[in-house]
Length: 404
Image (cartoon, rainbow, N blue to C red):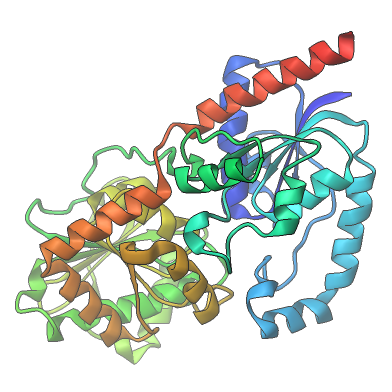
């Protein structure tokens, strides 16, 4: 019997699982661990050399089908029923193979762990009591957090309090989504007096389309601010971005005609492109510098998922707009129920985005309220280590009970 199986259902959930794996390995390098990334390819596990098992959900909605009827129809046509049936069968086959499961995400890994009839803990990173009754934990999910679920790790204090009142064993140890955001302190060439707007186009297949729309929004700031040359727009690009392909895409988009590529021999490490317009505003496109992008930003514009939440957790005011992919208008409405005063939702329109950012920058009191609301909702860092320690303690108890 192996010791641990991590069961997660999305890119952000896999990243959280990977961080907890790192902490467990640092404490017990020889502990046997596998992972089941239920949605997507599981790159966060595979990059760490963690063996992966189980049927994958590679459907068009990437796990967001319940938010949009059109996405659900696309998933049904692509094999939704067969995908979940295979995952159900794989979950049943887990019984007796692992001493403990670590479920990360929402009802899907929770249900898989329940079907496996194995002891499990649950890292609840998808839902929160801040969402209210519509998007908070429902009765079925709460039942799954009892029984064989040894302990639940909610993402904020409010949710932990509500679950404890419902008789669910919970421990708030911080929010693992806020770990790994320390950054390097490098300003990526940004002048100290610049107004820095972080641009989050996401990491999904629609990221390049989102990036073009965000560039179009950056072009509109000159119409809404008296000093457009003070702005620096820094993009956290996904690793797959091809700068040359982006240049070609820009040439075909008349909205981006004002941006010129700056030929610099010595770009800062991680910066793959720099652009400038005739008003003096600049764009920096960086790879693998996500934490630095957030730490530099006075305001963030996001068409992302987890990245948006991490931004507000750092106290950065967020202007969010629908992506061109699965995180569309219904997704934004759902997230705004959680974000509350920490974010502003605007249409996917360049002028609307530029106007909202300028309004936030011009209002320090509003920025302070947004920062406080975001930090309250997202909680503190340090949870990955604390959760790893709690998992190891639960594992030791399980071993001791089995030895009796």
